[in-house]
Image (cartoon, rainbow, N blue to C red; front, side, top):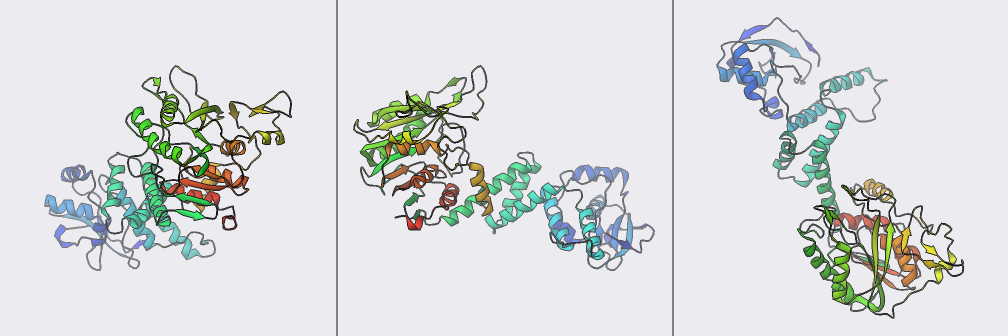
Length: 484
């Protein structure tokens, strides 16, 4: 900031100059206030205050002025000056620097940007005045990194949308950073997720997504009263794994139970409903994984199978999905690369068709094996590296990019590859069948059903608004309006 007419230092009484109200609103009392006050009490006010000669209002030094009044100092050093226009805010050091809170930095940044407006993309090389203006603003804000500026600004904007009538929410988030309860990055991600959730909730207001052959209910599948008894041909699902991931739901999240027994009991409610709606010749495929806790595996898949048998399901088959990027398993054990996919049926007369295998070349035996190419057979280990069926990939990264393009933050990575539901559907479904995924997520199963076509329709259940929106985006490439 350029100043002019700086005179020699004058010593005046603290009461003869006026507090700067705008600066007072900008900065809170710093956390190291007592330290600064003790320093000033011992050494006096060393750094002069800068005061407008027009109206005796402080330009820089509000905090020193407040301390001088509290200490009842008789005289303090002051520069009286005139400044250009109404830009009477400059940054100068005090005897001991104030510790600026996150709220201080945020308010300072917003104020300086309003005093020195400069739009992104504006050229400064052809406009010396604009270039000088930008340099002044950047100099003032140089103590705050660009990343910090961007994140503080984003947190402020999102909180203003989320809590327009409650400014204490923003201060609360900033306090988490200042009190080291959290980091700027974590608070930014937390607020961003809340903002996304709010945006998605408003987008799915009224709940369900119905278009053409696709219906996704924005609710839990504990009750599926929308579906009649024995109305579904094939069900493919992967419920939230126990003690593995925190999904963006409000409360009582499946998978976050205190014990594996409680988790299995909760799953029973969902799959009892699946048993009701599944046809007698239908098939159910479930991908579920184990976890290691307190030094031992919890036998989640085995407990799940026993629970399913108690409902009335028959375990017909078990595949092992071999993952190329398994999650590291610590301590004295191997890295668990496989996840089971169980094939359940209600009767031994279920529909099953392997004829489609003859039309696919599988030279590496990634999912088939046989004595001749004319009689291939599915293997129990499914290695999908490279996309064995040559279908379009169900890339989470690609979906994230599409979601971010419309302002939706997606953190869902727990998706199986498109080949999993594709193989299940090719083997156990017929044209015009109804396909169900009662833990729909971002609708990989739905994509597989639409990819196969031939009149297949998809029904999903998903309580998360974010995943509902992501499902719409994933399935938007299909002309659903022309599919009845």
